[in-house]
Image (cartoon, rainbow, N blue to C red; front, side):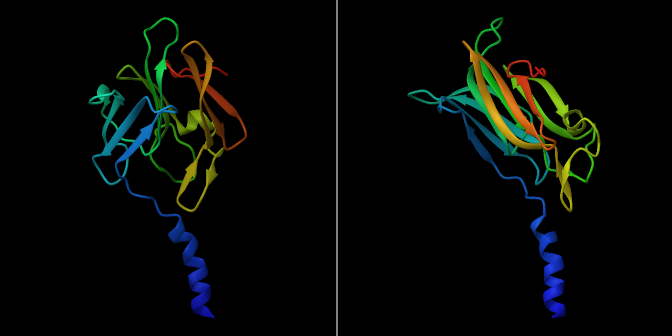
Length: 179
């Protein structure tokens, strides 16, 4: 009986262990471009991400970033009507350790034309430190990624649903909050 009780206490702890990094490939909705992200370390965001446009021959390298993310979203032909079209990329931050949102923990970042244009901390998304969904060892402020939504022409927004029930919209090219 004691053994079963000990196992019942330990199993939730084992299920909440941080997963290590591994290379990933993320593909745009219609497959016209993709991201290949390779970590430099076992945990965190150090690494290299390359964005490719799919062609009939060899795929074309479009952008390169000095970061790694396990969750990447992209749209191939984005513009804000003042710039030529390019690839808009959104990356999620690493595993957020602890139980409170912080201004030094990356939640989400926006990239365009080879540059990081805007980053948001978990505290900026949560609004207050305790406004998170926490487990034994980590927390999250984004409950669901809704993804890119087309507005008009080549203009897109990127939307997330927070753990406290808000839907946040961001300009896909600039990363600025729209609501």
